Image 1 (cartoon, rainbow, N blue to C red):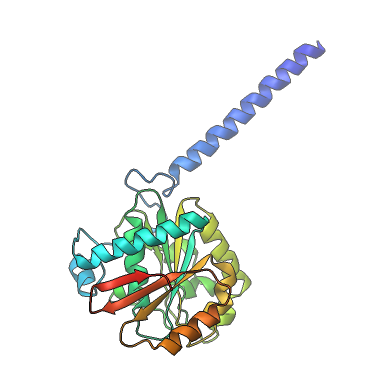
Image 2: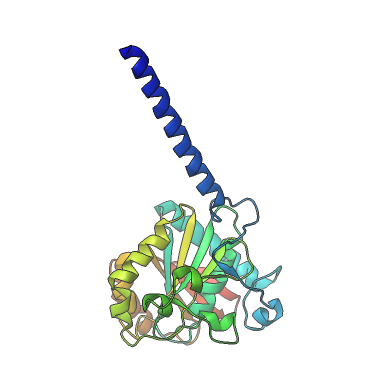
Length: 272
């Protein structure tokens, strides 16, 4: 009798284990970022219809575009992917020494180019909390953003949006913060960043950050990111500004530099 009871207990445990595995499979199959070979249907993240003409007017390379600019972003994408994968990193902060170098547009177009690769999804986050501007490239009117989430007024799912491109989700900014460096190292922000980086195994997270020489935000946030990339402007960024910016980064992993607004090739990439 004891052997029969043990056999029945094992059978029951196996049924419970199988049921749990089946439930896990169902959850995973509904995960919009777990299958990258087919079209993604977003159930919680809002998808917005955007004018590709208006985006192109703002130099956003979304849509079926083949020109020298999109080709340069493909080259940049390849360099970035190689370095991230070689180091098993999945997060990248993009900044510049000073204002006006084109870091935000570079962040947007790099995220779009990365999302066209079918092996991963991309989350673009506006963490220029003093001067958030990513949503200005996509909308003409004010939209809720990360400020509403940090202030507890909205859930994260209510501020995320998909711009009509598979595998790309954007977390925009909205209201500026005067105490931005404190917000970036707050417990709620740290928990959010860890969740964004670890929720999906094949997700890459791109953070658009403020200029290095304008505030201490990048320094305050550097412990929570894998790597940093600098955008500099040809003919404008001075050597001493670039050196000061790199000195401020200290031991932070430097992925490379982007030479923006280049008269020679439109945009070029290289390691510093």
